[in-house]
Length: 251
Image 1 (cartoon, one colour):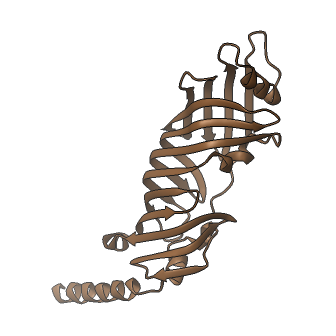
Image 2 (cartoon, one colour):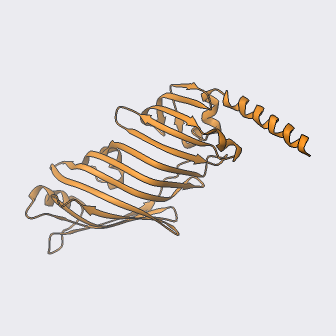
Image 3 (cartoon, helix red, strand yellow):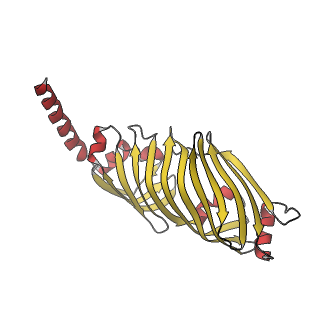
């Protein structure tokens, strides 16, 4: 029995040593990166420590990717990577644990800085463009069967500006995320700047729902004009923003 265990351990170590030398191109398949729509102009390194140049995910250009695999995670059959993305517009880092299919992920210590215009499709208003920076500091991001199911932490829209027919600085806005039994709820708030916002963003059952009330501080005319694009103001000048729809699967 003892001898069998020793032989099995040696064979396992040999298998891990072979896996560790797999080229990064093949590692991208094993780690589920390609299943999530990732492609690159060049893959470098190995499964153990590798990276990519010219990384794109579903047509979005990210830049350079570097990863380091935690060796013990292969013994648990749940590959765990320390990831870092450096690009002309985005900087991000996280520790990501995956199952062997790449459909179930748990990211922790997520830090992201990206331009606000990446969220343009969310508001669905072609006459309003977003400017500023989105900063995220998330304790967890959970993906199950390829769908985003849970978020905890904080996202901020710094130096928020909407432009288009009008230009309106909005100040700093934030969402405080907590996980719930069925998904996540984010509480919307402002920093006391030109825009007043209160409401929630709910992620549940592969759907998202935004329910918020927006108003301009004092008599900020540019902000009021921007809000009128989103909806009809009530007697107090506030606009109700209600958006819902299906989430986009990650893989």
